[in-house]
Length: 135
Ligand code: T46
Image (cartoon, rainbow, N blue to C red; front, side, top):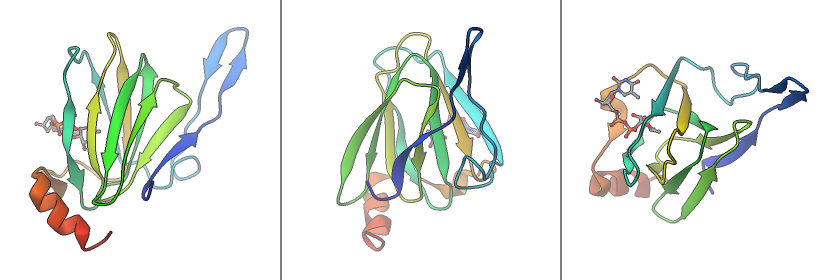
């Protein structure tokens, strides 16, 4: 889907377990300025319901699984994240909803910008108006 893609990171496996290194700009399509993680989401909860004008992100489910619905005015796709060596790149002007968090799931997000509430489009009609000019 336009502006969204799965990224496979290294998975270094030995008898002691798995290790995934992620280096800013080498393994991500942007410089990482911020990380945050989402944990302890009650089952049945859906988060997100917004888009970003400038922010690029990579979402990685470190434990358990979570589904991500991504949309633009012409396309819609659902990705299930359940492998800590796989990230979902989500570019600008993509609507996202995160749902079906399993118990104990941990969603790590690598972000290209510092937190800025003004970068969010949280109203779906406003999002469509803006995104239709691009898509
Ligand atoms: C996104 C998805 C995947 C901060 O103060 N700093 C931060 O860096 C972030 C990300 C959030 N917040 C505050 C803003 C809200 O008061 O934390 C509260 C919850 O944020 P929000 O409702 O936006 O959370 P989600 O899970 O709907 O969305 C988050 C990110 O905000 C968003 O950029 O793409 O995760």
